[in-house]
Length: 155
Image (cartoon, rainbow, N blue to C red; front, side, top):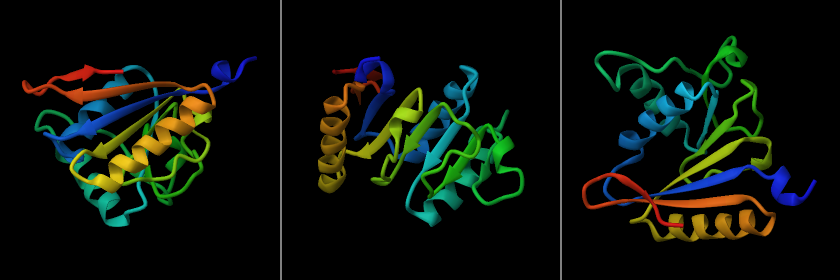
C-alpha cells in the first residue's frame, strides 16, 4: 500500500463569512446522511458545551443526535464532541475546531478542518496542517465561501 492509500482525506474550510456555529451543524448533518459517524474535536471545553446545546436546537424541525465524550454510552453516539485524541464512537469523519491537533487523521475517512480566516494564527496553523498532510500523501481539498455564500472547492 502506498502512503496515499493509507491516508484519509483532509478538507479545509476557510471561514470568512460564516462562523463555526453556522457551518458545522449542516456539515455534520451531511456526514450523518452519508451513513458516517462524526467526532468533533476542540481544545475549548466551553465551545464544546455551546455546540452541545446548539446541535439540539439548530433547526426547528429536527435535531442532531449527539453526546459529549465522558457521558454514558459515548460509544453509541452518531456524533461525539471531545477534547481527546481517541475515537470512542468509531467515527469516520473528524471535525477539527479551534486549532485542535488532529492526532492520527489517517484513522478517519475524512478530516474536516474549520478555521477562521480572520485569525492569522488559525490560518498559519491550517497551512501547517495542509503541508503535513500533503507530505504523507493525504488527499487535501480547500473550500472557500463565495460572495453568494456557497462553498466552492478552490484546491
